Image (cartoon, rainbow, N blue to C red; front, side, top):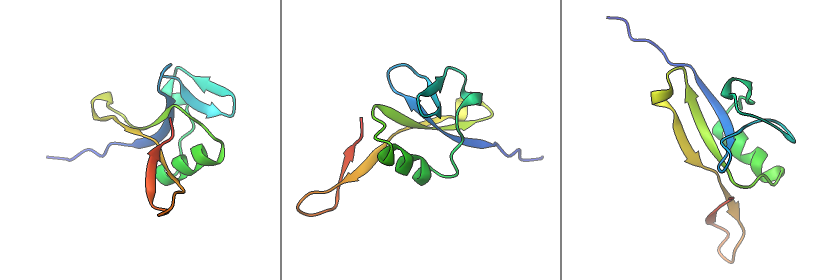
Length: 88
């Protein structure tokens, strides 16, 4: 029996609208048009650098039933310097 590999894309999605990030000021309903980040860390760093709020990370697979949606979090400075907080 052959075990099939699922291709995974790393996308950013607006929480409220469900639109996928294509480029600054450009979002799409079609996940296939969304920017595929090299890693989840790269996607989160991009959100922080560009002050994107109310977005979530979508690990998108060939079969939708395997998709994983995660909140985007970033480090925010406090007196201890180790607190994580939700971007959106």
